[in-house]
Amino acid sequence: MNRMNVYYPTTDCTGIAYRAEGSQLDNEVNYVWSSAPGRYFIINQESGIQQLILHSYTEINFDQLICRVSDESNTFVKLDPINLPFTEPATSPLQLKYQ
Image (tube, rainbow, N blue to C red):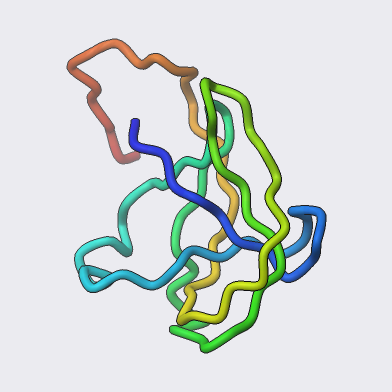
């Protein structure tokens, strides 16, 4: 699963999670995003794109989640944390069934 940096309004990587807005946002609203194994998010479609200055972000380094302090001014979308019904690595092929 691809990893992404998650940005926060605090200096300790806590609080509301955000993702830097990308050019393919319309195609990405149904994606599951991950910042580290066991940490999954979806885009909050109701909040829209926001111009913000955020103060920390998480990044993955050799499977270790690291909090970096840095003021980032950009357009961001809010993320909602979710739980997945499996652990990584998922066995292929992965099948999702809607009930």
